[in-house]
Length: 108
Image 1: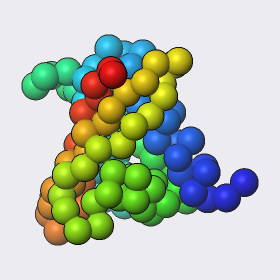
Image 2 (image 1 turned 180 degrees about the horizontal axis):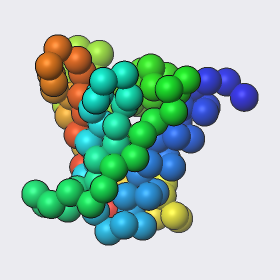
Image 3 (image 1 turned 45 degrees about the vertical axis):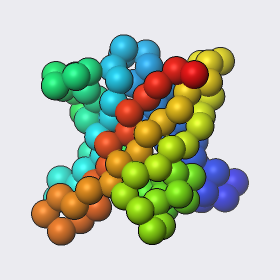
Image 4 (image 1 turned 90 degrees about the vertical axis):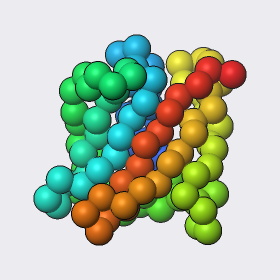
């Protein structure tokens, strides 16, 4: 299986966990050398997860490609999660000199 497929599967895993937890957004941000996942509903955080180290760059590249972020900081990516269609609004921002992302889920 290609790394890009594994990266996309990791994105789907994270987003499905968000749907299961009832949250509406997911943050991806580096903490040290770990790409951490933060689940949020409004301003309230509901826990954290991590992207496996060997997939971190591939996951970022996959998000940038699928959301069309090569030349802009905001984009959309359609995904199917648990049998429902979602639009994920992706915003890229700078966090201490590194790219970080906020993914907001909206059921279509």
